[in-house]
Amino acid sequence: MEPGPLSVLKVETSIHNRLVENSIGVTSVSQTGIIFGLNDSGNGPYLFAFDSTGRGLGYWQVAGAQNRDWESAAMGPCSSQSEQWSCLYIGDVGDNDARKPRLTIYRMPEPRVDVGRQIPRNPQPIHDVGRLDFRYSDQPHDVEAMYVALDGAVVLITKRRLLDSQGRPRPALLFRIPPAAWDSSGVVTAVLVDSLSIVPGQRQGGLITDAALTPDGRYLAVRTYRDLYVFAMDTTTGLPLAGRETGPCFIAGLREKQGEGIGWWWDRRRLVLTSEGKNAPMYLLACPLPAS
Image 1 (cartoon, rainbow, N blue to C red):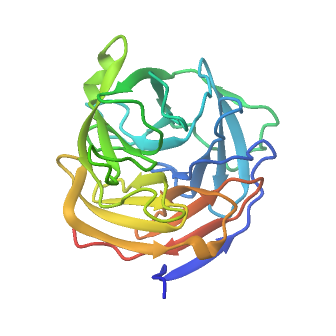
Image 2: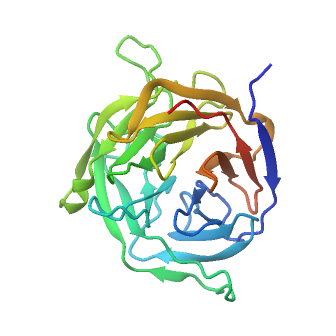
């Protein structure tokens, strides 16, 4: 018998006819009830907002940005000196063939959503956008999950099956970009710092598609197409505590079209899952939390 989430609530949505390949489900820290989504490759540089009932609230165009393959996003501080989690990080980090020598992360103030006004028909611009180009310290990787630690460091989690020098499957790798990298010019390096207990591709549907860190930095949720894991975190290093995770919670039974996004609900105990597909439903569920 497969392990499963403690409870599940299905939420139908009516977001926007342009949001057809949603790869994320980022819940706002400063605006309760607001969730952000975006399309992956082959689409424009747009950011969409919707609420916890699945109602669309408009969209924005990220000025100066290019959507080569937007696959991840996260909330985080606007700088290493800021304690306010009011910036959105978008990862143009998808690389199915693991060949891209350089990838990009964009950072911008979180758009403010006025739920009381009429929803604009056209996208609103986001102009104050920072750009960080990077490469991995070893070789190109395909990534669809990232989070931003309390100190502003960006941590990227590999998606696909990797083999070690003896041909054995490797656990998912964690690469870190320090917060000071945003003050650098040129291409910076994401350095291998840790790994997870998840071995991508060990079983069907086991590729890592998204991750979300709680605003207090204590828990990291990581999802695949079929399972959900929650890790206890070291809030100082921003990395998982060894042997302190729960899961898997089995989510393949939800029958998402292509489940890719995850975010923490505002009670910080439940999670919301999003999927590709026009107006695809969201799922709100609980999965056991590890001892912190």
